[in-house]
Image (cartoon, rainbow over all chains, first blue to last red; front, side):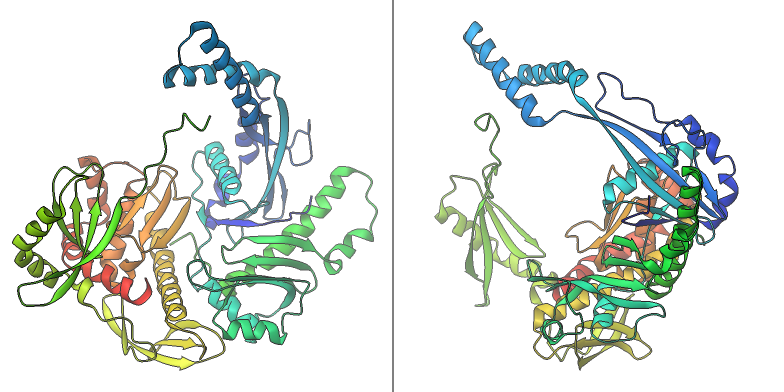
Amino acid sequence: MFFRNLTFFRFPATLAKSLDDLDARLEECRLKPVGPSEPMSRGFVSPFGRDEPAMSHRVGDAIWITLGGEDRLLPAAVVNDALARKIAEIEEKEGRRLGGRARKRLKEDLVMELLPRAFVRPTRLNASLDLEHGFIAVDSSSRKAAEALVSEVRHALGSFPALPLNAEVAVRAVMTGWLAGEPLPAGLSLGDECELKDPVDGGAVVRCSRHELQADEIRSHLEAGKQVTRLALVLDDHVSFVLGEDLVLRKLKFLDGAVEQLENSERDSLHAELDARFALMAGELKRLFAVLEQALKFSRAEA
Amino acid sequence: MPLLRTPRPAPPAEETRPLRLADGREVPVRWVRHPRARRLRLLVGERGARLTLPPRASIRAAEAFLHEHRDWLAQQLAAHVATTLPPLALWQEPQLPLRGEAVPLRWQPGRYARAALDDDGVLLQLPERAGERQARAALREFYGQQARADLGAWLPKYLPGLPRTPLSFRLRPLSSIWGSLSPGDALSLDLALVLGRPSAFEYVLVHELCHLIHANHSRAFWREVEKRWPDWRDERDYLRAQGPGLKAALARLAG
Protein backbone atom coordinates (compact mmCIF):
# COMPACT_ATOMS: atom_id res chain seq x y z
CA MET A 1 0.00 0.00 0.00
CA PHE A 2 3.00 2.32 0.17
CA PHE A 3 2.56 5.09 -2.38
CA ARG A 4 4.86 4.86 -5.37
CA ASN A 5 4.32 8.29 -6.90
CA LEU A 6 3.24 11.59 -5.43
CA THR A 7 1.35 14.44 -7.05
CA PHE A 8 0.67 17.19 -4.55
CA PHE A 9 -2.11 19.74 -4.28
CA ARG A 10 -2.39 22.35 -1.56
CA PHE A 11 -5.46 23.44 0.35
CA PRO A 12 -5.88 25.94 3.20
CA ALA A 13 -5.09 24.32 6.55
CA THR A 14 -8.19 26.07 7.90
CA LEU A 15 -10.19 23.51 5.97
CA ALA A 16 -9.59 20.91 8.71
CA LYS A 17 -12.83 21.75 10.50
CA SER A 18 -15.00 20.99 7.49
CA LEU A 19 -13.48 17.51 7.24
CA ASP A 20 -15.15 16.26 10.44
CA ASP A 21 -17.99 14.58 8.58
CA LEU A 22 -15.69 13.36 5.81
CA ASP A 23 -16.73 9.73 6.20
CA ALA A 24 -20.41 10.53 5.78
CA ARG A 25 -19.72 12.66 2.70
CA LEU A 26 -17.55 9.98 1.13
CA GLU A 27 -20.19 7.36 1.94
CA GLU A 28 -22.67 9.37 -0.16
CA CYS A 29 -20.26 9.14 -3.07
CA ARG A 30 -19.44 5.46 -2.61
CA LEU A 31 -18.43 3.57 -5.75
CA LYS A 32 -21.42 2.13 -7.57
CA PRO A 33 -20.91 -0.88 -9.82
CA VAL A 34 -20.64 0.19 -13.43
CA GLY A 35 -23.96 -0.20 -15.28
CA PRO A 36 -24.24 -2.47 -18.32
CA SER A 37 -24.22 0.44 -20.78
CA GLU A 38 -21.89 2.82 -18.93
CA PRO A 39 -18.25 3.15 -19.99
CA MET A 40 -17.02 3.76 -16.43
CA SER A 41 -17.92 4.63 -12.87
CA ARG A 42 -16.03 6.43 -10.10
CA GLY A 43 -16.60 6.65 -6.37
CA PHE A 44 -14.89 6.33 -3.03
CA VAL A 45 -14.16 2.97 -1.42
CA SER A 46 -12.72 1.94 1.90
CA PRO A 47 -8.92 2.17 2.05
CA PHE A 48 -8.89 -1.21 3.80
CA GLY A 49 -10.45 -3.06 0.92
CA ARG A 50 -13.80 -4.21 -0.33
CA ASP A 51 -16.76 -4.46 2.07
CA GLU A 52 -15.03 -2.59 4.89
CA PRO A 53 -17.18 0.03 6.58
CA ALA A 54 -14.61 2.80 7.15
CA MET A 55 -14.49 5.24 4.21
CA SER A 56 -11.33 6.94 5.41
CA HIS A 57 -8.62 6.25 7.90
CA ARG A 58 -7.20 8.93 10.15
CA VAL A 59 -3.87 8.81 11.98
CA GLY A 60 -3.10 12.06 13.82
CA ASP A 61 -3.69 14.78 11.27
CA ALA A 62 -3.26 12.56 8.23
CA ILE A 63 -6.26 11.08 6.43
CA TRP A 64 -6.13 8.24 3.97
CA ILE A 65 -8.82 8.04 1.30
CA THR A 66 -9.22 5.80 -1.72
CA LEU A 67 -10.97 6.47 -5.00
CA GLY A 68 -12.24 3.33 -6.66
CA GLY A 69 -13.30 2.94 -10.24
CA GLU A 70 -14.63 0.44 -12.73
CA ASP A 71 -13.80 0.90 -16.39
CA ARG A 72 -15.30 -1.09 -19.23
CA LEU A 73 -12.59 -2.25 -21.60
CA LEU A 74 -13.77 -1.71 -25.15
CA PRO A 75 -10.81 -1.41 -27.50
CA ALA A 76 -11.30 1.05 -30.35
CA ALA A 77 -9.97 -1.55 -32.78
CA VAL A 78 -12.82 -3.92 -31.88
CA VAL A 79 -15.44 -1.24 -32.45
CA ASN A 80 -13.88 -0.11 -35.71
CA ASP A 81 -13.64 -3.66 -37.04
CA ALA A 82 -17.28 -4.41 -36.23
CA LEU A 83 -18.27 -1.07 -37.73
CA ALA A 84 -16.40 -1.74 -40.97
CA ARG A 85 -18.16 -5.14 -41.33
CA LYS A 86 -21.55 -3.65 -40.67
CA ILE A 87 -21.04 -0.80 -43.11
CA ALA A 88 -19.86 -3.17 -45.82
CA GLU A 89 -22.93 -5.31 -45.22
CA ILE A 90 -25.34 -2.38 -45.47
CA GLU A 91 -23.64 -0.95 -48.54
CA GLU A 92 -23.83 -4.34 -50.22
CA LYS A 93 -27.52 -4.62 -49.46
CA GLU A 94 -28.58 -1.11 -50.34
CA GLY A 95 -26.07 -0.38 -53.07
CA ARG A 96 -25.17 3.09 -51.82
CA ARG A 97 -22.52 4.65 -49.63
CA LEU A 98 -23.53 5.60 -46.11
CA GLY A 99 -23.30 9.26 -45.11
CA GLY A 100 -21.22 10.55 -42.21
CA ARG A 101 -24.16 10.97 -39.87
CA ALA A 102 -25.45 7.46 -40.50
CA ARG A 103 -21.98 6.07 -39.81
CA LYS A 104 -21.78 7.97 -36.56
CA ARG A 105 -25.14 6.69 -35.43
CA LEU A 106 -24.17 3.17 -36.42
CA LYS A 107 -21.01 3.48 -34.35
CA GLU A 108 -22.92 4.70 -31.30
CA ASP A 109 -25.36 1.81 -31.63
CA LEU A 110 -22.48 -0.64 -31.90
CA VAL A 111 -20.80 0.74 -28.77
CA MET A 112 -24.08 0.41 -26.90
CA GLU A 113 -24.39 -3.16 -28.11
CA LEU A 114 -20.81 -4.12 -27.22
CA LEU A 115 -20.50 -2.34 -23.85
CA PRO A 116 -22.50 -4.87 -21.79
CA ARG A 117 -20.17 -7.61 -23.08
CA ALA A 118 -16.97 -5.72 -22.30
CA PHE A 119 -14.72 -6.68 -19.38
CA VAL A 120 -14.83 -4.50 -16.28
CA ARG A 121 -11.45 -3.42 -14.99
CA PRO A 122 -11.37 -2.27 -11.37
CA THR A 123 -8.98 0.54 -10.41
CA ARG A 124 -7.97 2.06 -7.09
CA LEU A 125 -6.19 5.32 -6.41
CA ASN A 126 -4.98 6.26 -2.94
CA ALA A 127 -4.42 9.71 -1.54
CA SER A 128 -3.30 11.09 1.77
CA LEU A 129 -4.43 14.43 3.19
CA ASP A 130 -2.19 16.25 5.64
CA LEU A 131 -4.13 18.76 7.73
CA GLU A 132 -1.11 20.34 9.38
CA HIS A 133 0.65 21.48 6.19
CA GLY A 134 -2.50 21.54 4.08
CA PHE A 135 -1.61 19.19 1.26
CA ILE A 136 -3.13 16.21 -0.48
CA ALA A 137 -0.68 13.70 -1.93
CA VAL A 138 -2.14 11.52 -4.68
CA ASP A 139 -0.46 8.20 -5.46
CA SER A 140 -0.13 8.89 -9.18
CA SER A 141 2.33 10.48 -11.55
CA SER A 142 -0.42 11.23 -14.02
CA ARG A 143 -1.69 14.77 -13.75
CA LYS A 144 -4.99 13.77 -15.21
CA ALA A 145 -5.63 10.97 -12.72
CA ALA A 146 -4.60 13.17 -9.79
CA GLU A 147 -6.84 16.00 -10.95
CA ALA A 148 -9.71 13.55 -11.36
CA LEU A 149 -9.29 12.43 -7.75
CA VAL A 150 -9.28 16.02 -6.50
CA SER A 151 -12.39 16.72 -8.57
CA GLU A 152 -14.12 13.76 -6.94
CA VAL A 153 -13.16 15.00 -3.47
CA ARG A 154 -14.50 18.43 -4.42
CA HIS A 155 -17.70 16.82 -5.62
CA ALA A 156 -18.06 14.85 -2.38
CA LEU A 157 -17.34 17.77 -0.05
CA GLY A 158 -19.20 20.41 -2.03
CA SER A 159 -16.15 22.65 -2.00
CA PHE A 160 -12.49 21.76 -1.80
CA PRO A 161 -10.20 24.65 -2.77
CA ALA A 162 -7.16 22.59 -3.76
CA LEU A 163 -4.50 24.24 -5.90
CA PRO A 164 -1.79 22.53 -7.89
CA LEU A 165 1.60 22.90 -6.26
CA ASN A 166 3.35 26.15 -7.19
CA ALA A 167 7.09 26.56 -6.59
CA GLU A 168 8.30 30.13 -6.26
CA VAL A 169 11.79 29.20 -7.42
CA ALA A 170 12.82 27.87 -10.81
CA VAL A 171 12.82 24.13 -10.08
CA ARG A 172 15.17 23.34 -12.96
CA ALA A 173 17.67 25.93 -11.82
CA VAL A 174 17.58 24.69 -8.22
CA MET A 175 18.05 21.04 -9.23
CA THR A 176 20.82 22.02 -11.64
CA GLY A 177 22.50 23.85 -8.77
CA TRP A 178 22.28 20.77 -6.55
CA LEU A 179 23.79 18.57 -9.22
CA ALA A 180 26.51 21.13 -9.96
CA GLY A 181 27.73 20.94 -6.37
CA GLU A 182 25.73 23.50 -4.42
CA PRO A 183 24.75 22.37 -0.93
CA LEU A 184 21.55 20.34 -0.71
CA PRO A 185 18.92 21.09 1.94
CA ALA A 186 19.54 19.35 5.27
CA GLY A 187 18.58 15.68 5.09
CA LEU A 188 18.63 15.35 1.29
CA SER A 189 21.36 13.65 -0.69
CA LEU A 190 21.78 12.78 -4.36
CA GLY A 191 20.56 9.44 -5.67
CA ASP A 192 21.78 7.70 -8.80
CA GLU A 193 19.49 8.93 -11.54
CA CYS A 194 18.97 12.14 -13.49
CA GLU A 195 17.65 13.59 -16.72
CA LEU A 196 19.42 16.50 -18.39
CA LYS A 197 17.85 18.62 -21.10
CA ASP A 198 19.17 21.29 -23.38
CA PRO A 199 16.65 24.03 -22.59
CA VAL A 200 15.83 24.95 -26.19
CA ASP A 201 12.95 23.67 -28.27
CA GLY A 202 13.77 20.17 -29.44
CA GLY A 203 17.03 20.26 -27.46
CA ALA A 204 19.10 17.17 -26.63
CA VAL A 205 18.07 14.94 -23.72
CA VAL A 206 20.43 12.80 -21.62
CA ARG A 207 19.06 10.26 -19.15
CA CYS A 208 21.33 8.57 -16.65
CA SER A 209 20.30 5.76 -14.39
CA ARG A 210 22.44 3.81 -11.93
CA HIS A 211 25.06 6.46 -12.53
CA GLU A 212 27.37 8.27 -10.14
CA LEU A 213 25.98 11.80 -10.35
CA GLN A 214 29.16 13.62 -9.31
CA ALA A 215 31.09 12.31 -12.32
CA ASP A 216 32.95 14.35 -14.94
CA GLU A 217 30.66 13.26 -17.80
CA ILE A 218 27.73 14.90 -16.08
CA ARG A 219 29.67 18.01 -15.21
CA SER A 220 30.59 18.53 -18.86
CA HIS A 221 26.91 18.26 -19.85
CA LEU A 222 26.10 21.01 -17.38
CA GLU A 223 28.92 23.13 -18.75
CA ALA A 224 27.43 22.80 -22.22
CA GLY A 225 24.31 24.48 -20.84
CA LYS A 226 22.07 21.50 -20.14
CA GLN A 227 19.70 21.68 -17.21
CA VAL A 228 18.37 19.07 -14.81
CA THR A 229 14.73 18.12 -15.38
CA ARG A 230 14.64 15.01 -13.15
CA LEU A 231 16.84 14.21 -10.22
CA ALA A 232 16.94 11.22 -7.86
CA LEU A 233 17.16 12.23 -4.21
CA VAL A 234 17.30 10.40 -0.88
CA LEU A 235 15.91 11.78 2.37
CA ASP A 236 17.82 10.55 5.44
CA ASP A 237 18.06 6.95 4.20
CA HIS A 238 14.31 6.75 4.78
CA VAL A 239 12.78 7.67 1.43
CA SER A 240 14.18 7.75 -2.09
CA PHE A 241 12.44 9.34 -5.05
CA VAL A 242 12.93 11.05 -8.40
CA LEU A 243 11.90 14.70 -8.35
CA GLY A 244 10.71 16.08 -11.68
CA GLU A 245 10.56 19.67 -12.82
CA ASP A 246 6.76 19.26 -12.86
CA LEU A 247 7.00 18.77 -9.04
CA VAL A 248 5.79 15.17 -9.33
CA LEU A 249 7.71 12.64 -7.22
CA ARG A 250 8.19 9.35 -9.01
CA LYS A 251 9.70 6.00 -8.02
CA LEU A 252 9.01 6.70 -4.37
CA LYS A 253 10.57 4.02 -2.18
CA PHE A 254 10.61 3.62 1.57
CA LEU A 255 14.08 2.43 2.53
CA ASP A 256 15.26 0.19 5.32
CA GLY A 257 15.77 3.13 7.66
CA ALA A 258 12.02 3.68 7.69
CA VAL A 259 10.63 0.20 7.14
CA GLU A 260 12.66 -1.65 9.78
CA GLN A 261 10.40 -0.32 12.52
CA LEU A 262 7.58 -2.26 10.88
CA GLU A 263 9.35 -5.56 10.66
CA ASN A 264 10.18 -5.76 14.33
CA SER A 265 6.63 -6.03 15.51
CA GLU A 266 4.03 -8.70 14.78
CA ARG A 267 0.49 -7.63 14.10
CA ASP A 268 -2.39 -10.00 14.04
CA SER A 269 -4.81 -8.43 11.58
CA LEU A 270 -4.61 -6.88 8.15
CA HIS A 271 -6.30 -3.80 9.55
CA ALA A 272 -3.59 -3.29 12.14
CA GLU A 273 -0.87 -3.90 9.55
CA LEU A 274 -2.31 -1.27 7.18
CA ASP A 275 -2.78 1.14 10.05
CA ALA A 276 0.88 0.81 11.03
CA ARG A 277 2.04 1.22 7.45
CA PHE A 278 -0.08 4.29 6.84
CA ALA A 279 1.07 5.87 10.09
CA LEU A 280 4.69 5.34 9.03
CA MET A 281 4.10 6.66 5.53
CA ALA A 282 2.15 9.70 6.66
CA GLY A 283 4.97 10.64 9.00
CA GLU A 284 7.55 10.33 6.23
CA LEU A 285 5.41 12.29 3.78
CA LYS A 286 5.01 15.07 6.31
CA ARG A 287 8.77 15.36 6.77
CA LEU A 288 9.44 15.06 3.03
CA PHE A 289 6.94 17.79 2.24
CA ALA A 290 8.40 20.09 4.87
CA VAL A 291 11.91 19.69 3.41
CA LEU A 292 10.76 20.24 -0.17
CA GLU A 293 8.49 23.12 0.79
CA GLN A 294 11.42 24.97 2.26
CA ALA A 295 13.82 24.15 -0.57
CA LEU A 296 11.45 24.94 -3.43
CA LYS A 297 9.37 27.63 -1.70
CA PHE A 298 5.91 26.19 -2.28
CA SER A 299 3.14 28.81 -2.25
CA ARG A 300 0.62 28.55 0.53
CA ALA A 301 -3.06 28.21 -0.24
CA GLU A 302 -4.30 30.68 2.39
CA ALA A 303 -3.84 34.44 2.40
CA MET B 1 -11.14 4.04 -42.82
CA PRO B 2 -8.48 6.55 -43.74
CA LEU B 3 -10.22 7.52 -46.98
CA LEU B 4 -13.22 8.86 -45.15
CA ARG B 5 -11.37 11.13 -42.82
CA THR B 6 -11.22 14.71 -44.06
CA PRO B 7 -7.55 15.46 -44.57
CA ARG B 8 -6.08 18.17 -42.40
CA PRO B 9 -5.60 21.24 -44.62
CA ALA B 10 -1.97 21.88 -45.48
CA PRO B 11 -0.59 25.13 -44.10
CA PRO B 12 -0.89 27.96 -46.63
CA ALA B 13 2.03 28.35 -49.03
CA GLU B 14 4.35 31.05 -47.79
CA GLU B 15 7.34 32.95 -49.13
CA THR B 16 9.15 36.09 -48.08
CA ARG B 17 9.82 38.78 -50.69
CA PRO B 18 11.54 42.11 -50.14
CA LEU B 19 9.65 45.34 -50.78
CA ARG B 20 11.40 48.64 -51.49
CA LEU B 21 9.81 51.51 -49.60
CA ALA B 22 9.60 55.11 -50.80
CA ASP B 23 12.72 56.06 -48.81
CA GLY B 24 14.77 53.33 -50.45
CA ARG B 25 14.71 50.88 -47.50
CA GLU B 26 13.93 47.25 -48.20
CA VAL B 27 11.57 45.44 -45.83
CA PRO B 28 10.62 41.76 -45.95
CA VAL B 29 6.97 40.96 -46.61
CA ARG B 30 5.59 37.46 -46.04
CA TRP B 31 3.42 36.45 -49.00
CA VAL B 32 0.83 33.90 -47.93
CA ARG B 33 -1.57 32.26 -50.37
CA HIS B 34 -4.65 31.30 -48.42
CA PRO B 35 -7.32 29.01 -49.92
CA ARG B 36 -10.19 30.91 -48.32
CA ALA B 37 -8.90 34.46 -48.93
CA ARG B 38 -11.27 36.61 -51.01
CA ARG B 39 -9.10 39.64 -51.67
CA LEU B 40 -5.57 40.97 -51.21
CA ARG B 41 -4.87 41.91 -47.63
CA LEU B 42 -1.83 43.60 -46.07
CA LEU B 43 -1.32 43.22 -42.31
CA VAL B 44 1.37 44.28 -39.85
CA GLY B 45 1.73 42.04 -36.82
CA GLU B 46 4.42 41.11 -34.35
CA ARG B 47 6.14 39.04 -37.05
CA GLY B 48 6.31 41.99 -39.44
CA ALA B 49 4.38 42.63 -42.64
CA ARG B 50 2.20 39.94 -44.20
CA LEU B 51 0.36 39.95 -47.50
CA THR B 52 -2.51 37.48 -47.86
CA LEU B 53 -3.37 36.46 -51.42
CA PRO B 54 -6.43 34.63 -52.72
CA PRO B 55 -5.51 31.37 -54.49
CA ARG B 56 -5.66 32.83 -58.00
CA ALA B 57 -4.44 36.40 -57.48
CA SER B 58 -1.75 37.44 -59.93
CA ILE B 59 1.67 38.42 -58.71
CA ARG B 60 1.58 41.60 -60.73
CA ALA B 61 -1.68 42.71 -59.11
CA ALA B 62 -0.21 41.95 -55.68
CA GLU B 63 2.91 43.99 -56.44
CA ALA B 64 0.81 46.90 -57.61
CA PHE B 65 -1.25 46.61 -54.43
CA LEU B 66 1.88 46.66 -52.27
CA HIS B 67 3.27 49.62 -54.18
CA GLU B 68 0.07 51.55 -53.68
CA HIS B 69 0.10 50.96 -49.91
CA ARG B 70 3.81 51.17 -49.18
CA ASP B 71 3.53 54.50 -47.37
CA TRP B 72 0.87 53.09 -45.09
CA LEU B 73 3.11 50.08 -44.51
CA ALA B 74 6.10 52.27 -43.62
CA GLN B 75 3.96 54.15 -41.14
CA GLN B 76 2.65 50.96 -39.53
CA LEU B 77 6.07 49.37 -39.34
CA ALA B 78 7.42 52.45 -37.58
CA ALA B 79 4.63 52.16 -35.02
CA HIS B 80 5.37 48.48 -34.47
CA VAL B 81 8.39 48.20 -32.25
CA ALA B 82 8.76 44.46 -32.67
CA THR B 83 10.27 44.63 -36.12
CA THR B 84 12.79 47.31 -35.21
CA LEU B 85 14.19 45.93 -31.92
CA PRO B 86 17.83 44.85 -31.98
CA PRO B 87 18.59 41.22 -31.09
CA LEU B 88 19.62 40.17 -27.57
CA ALA B 89 23.23 41.25 -26.95
CA LEU B 90 24.94 38.22 -25.43
CA TRP B 91 27.20 39.06 -22.45
CA GLN B 92 26.36 42.75 -22.91
CA GLU B 93 22.66 43.39 -22.47
CA PRO B 94 22.68 45.96 -19.62
CA GLN B 95 19.16 45.66 -18.21
CA LEU B 96 15.95 43.68 -18.18
CA PRO B 97 12.35 44.83 -17.99
CA LEU B 98 10.70 43.34 -14.90
CA ARG B 99 7.46 44.35 -13.15
CA GLY B 100 7.25 47.63 -15.05
CA GLU B 101 10.82 48.70 -14.28
CA ALA B 102 14.22 48.30 -15.88
CA VAL B 103 16.37 46.10 -13.64
CA PRO B 104 20.16 46.03 -14.07
CA LEU B 105 21.44 42.77 -15.57
CA ARG B 106 24.87 41.35 -14.74
CA TRP B 107 26.43 38.56 -16.81
CA GLN B 108 28.76 36.12 -15.15
CA PRO B 109 30.50 32.98 -16.37
CA GLY B 110 29.62 29.95 -14.27
CA ARG B 111 29.33 26.17 -14.20
CA TYR B 112 25.70 26.08 -15.27
CA ALA B 113 23.02 28.38 -16.67
CA ARG B 114 20.77 30.21 -14.23
CA ALA B 115 19.33 33.66 -13.70
CA ALA B 116 18.43 34.95 -10.26
CA LEU B 117 17.18 38.18 -8.74
CA ASP B 118 19.23 39.72 -5.92
CA ASP B 119 19.52 43.16 -4.33
CA ASP B 120 21.59 44.58 -7.21
CA GLY B 121 19.32 43.35 -9.97
CA VAL B 122 19.46 40.18 -12.02
CA LEU B 123 22.52 37.96 -12.14
CA LEU B 124 22.67 35.77 -15.23
CA GLN B 125 25.19 32.99 -14.84
CA LEU B 126 26.09 31.20 -18.04
CA PRO B 127 28.68 28.57 -18.95
CA GLU B 128 31.31 29.93 -21.34
CA ARG B 129 30.35 27.43 -24.02
CA ALA B 130 26.67 28.39 -23.91
CA GLY B 131 25.21 30.45 -26.71
CA GLU B 132 22.31 32.76 -27.24
CA ARG B 133 19.73 29.98 -27.11
CA GLN B 134 20.83 28.91 -23.64
CA ALA B 135 20.79 32.54 -22.47
CA ARG B 136 17.24 32.98 -23.77
CA ALA B 137 16.14 29.74 -22.12
CA ALA B 138 17.63 30.86 -18.79
CA LEU B 139 15.86 34.22 -19.06
CA ARG B 140 12.58 32.56 -19.94
CA GLU B 141 12.87 30.35 -16.92
CA PHE B 142 13.74 33.35 -14.79
CA TYR B 143 10.62 35.19 -15.94
CA GLY B 144 8.54 32.07 -15.37
CA GLN B 145 9.81 31.81 -11.83
CA GLN B 146 9.13 35.50 -11.07
CA ALA B 147 5.64 35.15 -12.50
CA ARG B 148 4.95 32.03 -10.40
CA ALA B 149 6.13 33.84 -7.27
CA ASP B 150 3.69 36.70 -7.96
CA LEU B 151 0.95 34.22 -8.71
CA GLY B 152 1.57 32.36 -5.46
CA ALA B 153 1.37 35.63 -3.51
CA TRP B 154 -1.85 36.88 -5.12
CA LEU B 155 -3.88 33.75 -5.62
CA PRO B 156 -4.93 32.93 -2.02
CA LYS B 157 -6.58 36.35 -1.70
CA TYR B 158 -9.06 35.58 -4.44
CA LEU B 159 -9.86 31.94 -3.74
CA PRO B 160 -12.67 32.52 -1.25
CA GLY B 161 -15.72 33.45 -3.28
CA LEU B 162 -14.82 31.31 -6.27
CA PRO B 163 -16.83 28.19 -7.00
CA ARG B 164 -13.77 26.14 -7.98
CA THR B 165 -10.03 26.54 -8.21
CA PRO B 166 -8.07 26.36 -11.45
CA LEU B 167 -6.74 22.85 -11.96
CA SER B 168 -3.43 23.90 -13.46
CA PHE B 169 -1.43 26.99 -14.31
CA ARG B 170 0.54 27.56 -17.44
CA LEU B 171 2.80 30.53 -18.11
CA ARG B 172 4.18 30.93 -21.59
CA PRO B 173 4.43 33.55 -24.31
CA LEU B 174 1.03 34.02 -25.98
CA SER B 175 0.76 35.88 -29.24
CA SER B 176 -2.49 37.81 -29.14
CA ILE B 177 -4.24 37.29 -25.79
CA TRP B 178 -3.14 37.80 -22.19
CA GLY B 179 -4.71 34.76 -20.63
CA SER B 180 -7.37 32.12 -20.99
CA LEU B 181 -9.31 29.64 -18.92
CA SER B 182 -10.07 26.34 -20.61
CA PRO B 183 -13.35 24.47 -20.12
CA GLY B 184 -11.35 22.03 -17.97
CA ASP B 185 -10.36 24.92 -15.64
CA ALA B 186 -6.74 25.07 -16.82
CA LEU B 187 -5.49 28.63 -16.48
CA SER B 188 -3.06 29.97 -19.04
CA LEU B 189 -1.32 33.33 -18.70
CA ASP B 190 1.04 35.27 -20.93
CA LEU B 191 4.59 35.27 -19.61
CA ALA B 192 4.99 38.85 -20.90
CA LEU B 193 2.71 40.04 -18.07
CA VAL B 194 5.57 39.81 -15.59
CA LEU B 195 7.50 42.40 -17.63
CA GLY B 196 4.76 44.98 -17.21
CA ARG B 197 3.42 46.66 -14.12
CA PRO B 198 2.25 44.21 -11.44
CA SER B 199 -1.25 45.68 -11.17
CA ALA B 200 -1.92 44.80 -14.83
CA PHE B 201 -0.74 41.21 -14.22
CA GLU B 202 -2.94 40.92 -11.16
CA TYR B 203 -5.93 42.28 -13.07
CA VAL B 204 -5.49 39.65 -15.81
CA LEU B 205 -5.34 36.96 -13.12
CA VAL B 206 -8.53 38.31 -11.52
CA HIS B 207 -10.19 38.47 -14.93
CA GLU B 208 -9.39 34.84 -15.69
CA LEU B 209 -10.39 33.68 -12.19
CA CYS B 210 -13.76 35.40 -12.65
CA HIS B 211 -14.29 33.17 -15.68
CA LEU B 212 -14.66 30.34 -13.13
CA ILE B 213 -17.91 32.06 -12.12
CA HIS B 214 -19.07 33.14 -15.59
CA ALA B 215 -17.45 31.55 -18.62
CA ASN B 216 -18.30 34.56 -20.80
CA HIS B 217 -17.93 38.32 -20.95
CA SER B 218 -21.47 39.14 -19.86
CA ARG B 219 -22.41 42.05 -17.62
CA ALA B 220 -22.62 39.63 -14.72
CA PHE B 221 -19.02 38.64 -15.41
CA TRP B 222 -17.81 42.24 -15.44
CA ARG B 223 -19.68 42.89 -12.19
CA GLU B 224 -17.63 40.11 -10.56
CA VAL B 225 -14.42 41.61 -11.98
CA GLU B 226 -15.42 45.08 -10.78
CA LYS B 227 -16.11 43.75 -7.27
CA ARG B 228 -12.56 42.41 -7.04
CA TRP B 229 -10.72 44.97 -9.17
CA PRO B 230 -12.58 48.30 -9.38
CA ASP B 231 -9.91 50.01 -11.55
CA TRP B 232 -9.86 47.36 -14.25
CA ARG B 233 -10.35 49.97 -17.00
CA ASP B 234 -6.96 51.54 -16.18
CA GLU B 235 -5.27 48.17 -16.51
CA ARG B 236 -7.08 47.39 -19.73
CA ASP B 237 -5.94 50.72 -21.19
CA TYR B 238 -2.39 50.08 -20.00
CA LEU B 239 -2.33 46.65 -21.62
CA ARG B 240 -3.77 48.03 -24.87
CA ALA B 241 -1.16 50.77 -25.00
CA GLN B 242 1.92 48.98 -23.64
CA GLY B 243 0.98 45.36 -24.34
CA PRO B 244 2.47 44.95 -27.80
CA GLY B 245 5.72 46.43 -26.49
CA LEU B 246 5.81 43.95 -23.60
CA LYS B 247 5.14 41.00 -25.89
CA ALA B 248 7.83 42.19 -28.28
CA ALA B 249 10.32 42.68 -25.42
CA LEU B 250 9.69 39.12 -24.20
CA ALA B 251 10.03 37.71 -27.71
CA ARG B 252 13.35 39.54 -28.05
CA LEU B 253 14.78 38.42 -24.70
CA ALA B 254 13.33 35.01 -24.17
CA GLY B 255 11.30 33.97 -27.21
